[in-house]
Length: 103
Image (tube, rainbow, N blue to C red):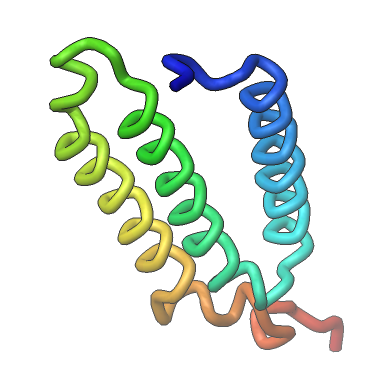
């Protein structure tokens, strides 16, 4: 039984999440409508992967017992991103309605 994740695994996961979140940043900046659902979903998958690592590899009691605080933290971030990306005020940002045209 391994007590810590392999360094290569951690590096691979860090690279994957870095590339994913930077590409989502670019697609959000380019006003792609699908980012409104993909960003909260990606945050949820990231939270699951981090909580999984915490659950399987935490060695100290305070680290093992922090799952509730971490889950609440990730849940609030996901709810905030859902609210921020899907509220009525930002809908014109993802459509051409928000663009001003020259007359």
